[in-house]
Image 1 (tube, rainbow, N blue to C red):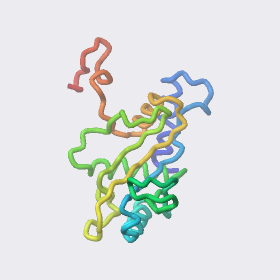
Image 2 (cartoon, helix red, strand yellow; image 1 turned 90 degrees about the horizontal axis):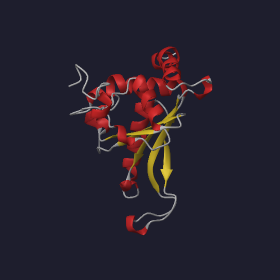
Image 3 (cartoon, rainbow, N blue to C red; image 1 turned 45 degrees about the horizontal axis):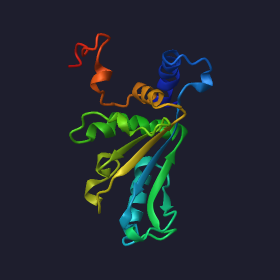
Length: 196
């Protein structure tokens, strides 16, 4: 069993059950899957860049990346239906937990000028998307072999029905969120000692 999965089952799950007053253990929010997506608008002009991005996602996740295609044509973007526009990997079970562990302990600390993850990137249905500007923050990527720097969208899909449950789940798993003034304020409305 991976470290994060064990942490979820022994610490996070009981804490969430108590915090939200959940009676049925199947209703406790859990991490369902993590999706890594690279969108490349230049994929039609430069197919080699898409192959490189696909290989980089494979190195990062240890899983084959699927090519994504345009669902409909948009003339302003010179986009035709069925055109290759990016690649994606979906992680579940042990690979998901291992990736989450590496993301929290190795990758996020390598982000330049990092001040915490923003909490406004939740979609209203308990899912969170983190945008990474450069793929070089992943230790699996060799900086000298990069042809083009591109971003990666990392989406955490949870079974939570509300964003506050998903936020609590991801925070308990170790995601370093930037807390707002209201969240850091103590019971009297003043910042807690050590938080200021």
